[in-house]
Image (cartoon, rainbow, N blue to C red; front, top):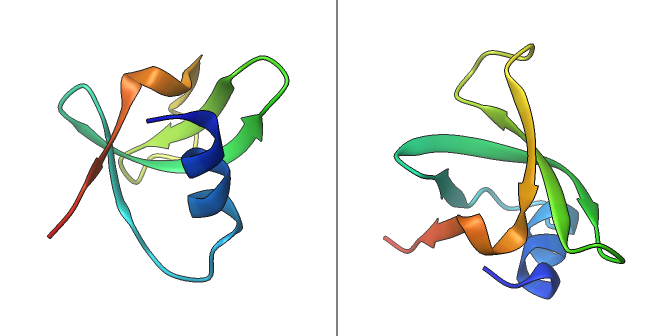
Length: 61
């Protein structure tokens, strides 16, 4: 996923299905300058990761 799409999803009121590897994630923050995102993995608020935007995949239903 590119950083512009990650930012669109983060700013949207809609819900999108996004995955990091095989895990479903919520985008918590987008660092556009560095192309990085902070995500919460699953429903566990203490399980956060900061990764490159290109590691995220939007699942279109």
